[in-house]
Amino acid sequence: MTAIRKICLLGLGEVGTTLASDLAGRTDIVIKSWNLLFGEAQSRPSKALWELPHVMAADSATSRPW
Image 1 (cartoon, rainbow, N blue to C red):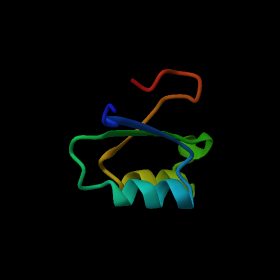
Image 2 (cartoon, one colour; image 1 turned 90 degrees about the horizontal axis):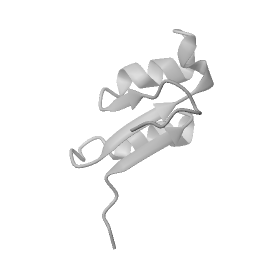
Image 3 (cartoon, one colour; image 1 turned 135 degrees about the horizontal axis):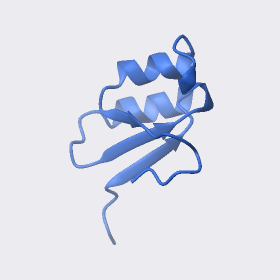
Image 4 (tube, rainbow, N blue to C red; image 1 turned 180 degrees about the vertical axis):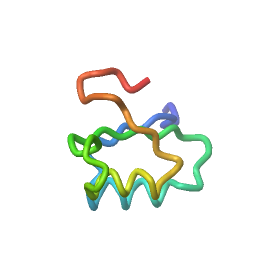
């Protein structure tokens, strides 16, 4: 079995934030996230993205995050 190296979270709400926080110490995994509300600086997902520096924002749900 191949090890997971890349994760894309569709949404950065309660579950996505918890998962991303749990994976914070895993330097062998690349984590990206997309959320419709990333365009609103004061939204909960945008604030979560700032608090999770190891998570990169994907530019849209239709783009390939890699």
